[in-house]
Length: 227
Image (cartoon, rainbow, N blue to C red; front, side, top):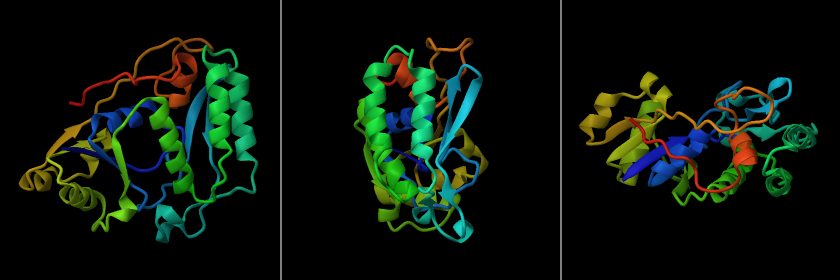
């Protein structure tokens, strides 16, 4: 059984969903620490002026001593309206805008105060849009032990994995010898996204999957086997 895991992500890139699609079980890492300036609460879209970040504002007081499950969205800021206006302005000429935008607007309007819950709901939305049926579970429901490499190894053991699909950053912290000793093979996802027609000039890779979705539409995700 192939297991993969990743932190929550707002408007993730295509590689995030590719990892989920390749796995038999995906673990939603909602029990780790929030990382400021990461891709957890933000990603990029393409505009006529270049790329633009769309960021969910969060209340970060005390985040260094709490898990991501405690990270609150700063809903006193009108971030939803700003994001929808930016998307409408820059993707209204996209091939699938009329189909996709109303669905995204409805999803964006979901009222949640916790970042992990908002991203959890949005993940379900993207899995449906890209026809991915992988089983997804929350790390916070697994009573896991350890941090970083030990945490990943523990979840693999408890799920009965014989293979773990890691992102490229896993090379920096996973203790490969420990996985080998446990009889678990580690494979690294080397995702190279597809090139497709975009608005606004030369192609820009690795944007939020929203860019691909608006231009190419819902449907099966382009696949890239890990190394």
